[in-house]
Amino acid sequence: MTPVLSSLLSGLDARLPALRALYEDLHAHPELSFQEVRTAGVVAAHLREHGWTVTEGVGGTGVVGVLSAGEGPVVLLRADMDALPVKEETGLSYASTATAVDGEGSEVPVMHACGHDMHVTCLLGASALLAANRNAWRGTVVAVFQPAEEVGGAPAMIADGFLERFPRAEVCLGQHVAPAPVGFIGTRPGPVMAASDSLRVRLCGRGGHGSTPETTVDPVVMAAAIVMRLQTVVSREVGAGQTAVVTVGSIHSGTKENIIPDTADLRINVRSTTPAVRDLVLAAVRRIIRAEAAASGAPKEPEITDFNAFPVTVNDPQATATVQAGLTRALGEGRVFTLPQTLTGSEDFGTFGTALQVPSVFWYFGGADPVAYEGVTLDALLENGIPPEIPGNHSPLFAPVPDPTIEVGVTSLLAAAAQWLTAGTEAALTPEPAAG
Image 1 (cartoon, rainbow, N blue to C red):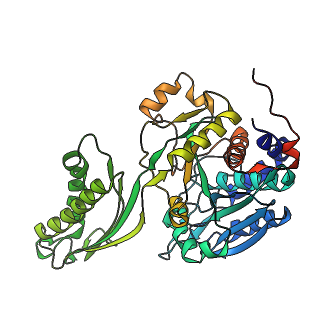
Image 2: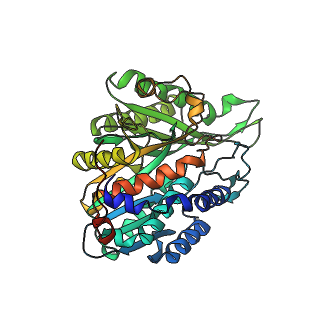
Image 3: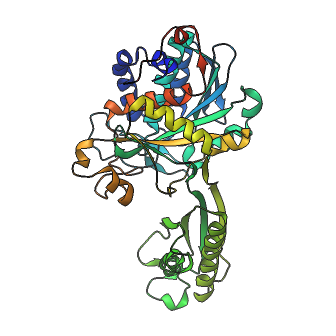
């Protein structure tokens, strides 16, 4: 462990109980994308308490903290804050019972089913230690608490003048909790997460009485045909060595069992890892939608609207090697591994590095109880992926174990940042421990 990191971690153990209480509070009070008002207030208060310069309302509900400790590199650390419209089923004492009104006016349950509450907790823990041990490092840290990762909050922050309003980072660092065993971290150079494209589709039929379907054009049947046909895109049009996913996550149509409705609405998500596959799959999806509508005798062309498009998340190879070295020194040999392939999940984190034209690195840290992985080797995990019986991100059962996930998450952020931050007075006086 480097002198800078050793000094930065000073006092972490004493802060862990308060960080766990903070995590449980955030978990119990989730907020939907661009509605993170309470969360942003908690974040801003914590940052100010520790002497950070704080700007609120960036890109809607985003919070940016800046802390300088003399001349040196500028490092961006990012955490996302939003939750999902999912009803929690974990049974935890601090489980969410929250509801909210979504962007379409519907009341929905809300849960931190993707672990963003853990991300906020870890970055707040790291920010407190950076402030408390300010004499140990030199440089500037920009702590970004981003709204609406699930629907593209990073571009909203960039559009709100992020590049002009805050110190220009030389590297962007981010992490995500995963259902892997706690204590393990995975990342890879190059493409690390897939591109994501979402489509909103309205199918136009002709409604009527359920007893006389011959007088109608049934959009429910049309939607069913499209859903089934879309399953052939990946299996029959994408090469076996290529990666793509097509998901129909939402279908809404009709109000009563004996009324054939006029319209059916679908929401479709496409994941891809290369521009060529992305173009192929999106073209196939649009072709199938239009063809099935024509085959059904639809009186109007389907309405297809693009929204929530994220590019492939790409890790800079050199910066990734630097981060992996820092994480290995902090957590020990055998704890940091290279992911064997690009993950099909997606992120808008890369927007910051792309906009700033600087390297970025994104990694996953485990949050699952190791007991759930008894008998599963790391090699088997890398080869076969997460076992299906372990709840993953976006599941109503997803619940990282707070201890020691919080400790690992805080340590990981500081270990990565310390690879760029130069030594301050305290760190310069702390000798590097002898090897062996």
